[in-house]
Amino acid sequence: MPLKYFYTHFLKWRKPIGWLLLLYLLAGWIFYANQDAFIFRARVIHADKNVAIQAPHKEITIPINQEDTLHLISFITDKAPARGVVLYFHGNRENVEWYAPKADLFTQEGYEVLMMDYPGYGKSRGEISEQKIYQWAIWAYQLARKQFSSNEIIIYGKSLGTGVAAYLASVKDCRQLILETPYTNFPAVFSYYAPIYPFKTLLQFQFPTEQFLEQVVAPIRILHGTNDFVVAHQHSLQLAKHKKGISLLIIKGGAHNNLFDFQLTRTTLKKWLSH
Image (cartoon, rainbow, N blue to C red; front, top):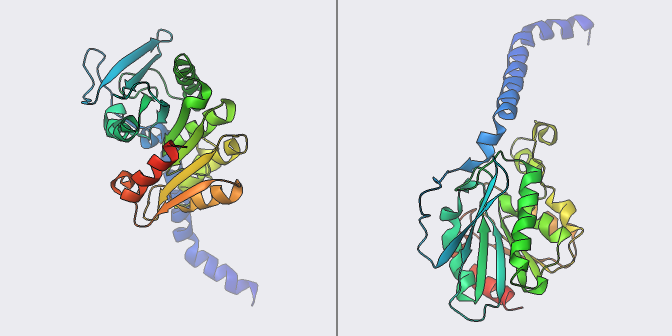
């Protein structure tokens, strides 16, 4: 085709292409500039208020410096002595109050549960960063080790918390690592739905779960639902393919936040907890 043909069509589509490119760049910039608010949907609890949790628990507050305060909830089992402790790292929504009902299954099986809030969540204070979350997870582990041996510690991650849990299990010994609705890495969560953006560059948070699992020596269990439209269950399939020996439970019809509503989930978790 003659060069004149291409030039004519270029002139015709020049403005629409320019507008699309501008819209693409603008949307990318908005996401980059507001990613903390977009990702971390935290709800603050005033320090002088009690947490709205009905289950037996105690609050633990650890002042770190003038800006940072680590706040945790220790859920207590009525079975003595406790079989161990579950270090539970929650998702990106709300705070420990929202995830507190999840502790019931573990306490009923004789485990205490230690659940921390990330910086800016609940009564935890400070600016959030990936490295700070990792450090706080280590402090939570050290707190658990004051009462339990490493073989009595189960590290559990939900959604956002799966990257945190995987990191902790890669540097600390534990009885097992359980991941609920995990991702291979954080940018891949967004790239799955919008592959036209370079999220690995745009995102300040990477949480490379896949890399962390390579260093985990404890048994790894994963549960995920086929109707998860936040973190697609293909992430779990890829993790299980990447690391041999992973126990994988795929819940047909399970969504991102309702896996505990399925009897198969609860039965399987109880089985894993007994190992």
